[in-house]
Image (tube, rainbow, N blue to C red; front, side, top):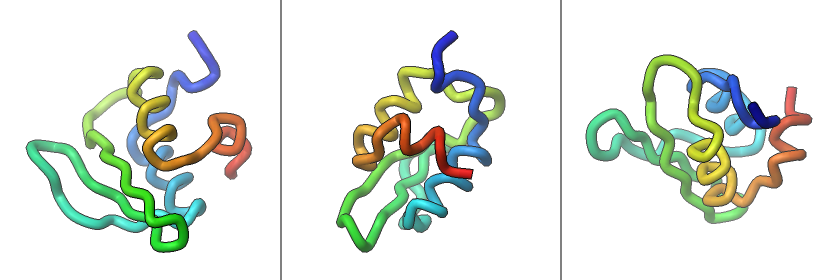
Length: 75
């Protein structure tokens, strides 16, 4: 297991909000689009039960333009 494993949807959203993201709209199925006004970046987040797969969280952070180390340091 890597550094980005073990995060749940709510934990990820909490950290993204602290990084300036807001809910933008509902997407297909259980996916949501989040937007950051300051950076102009969008990211798609699946709202599923359980832990987010590490690769999925990595892709979310890449879309959002957030360094994984910065994400981990957000309280």
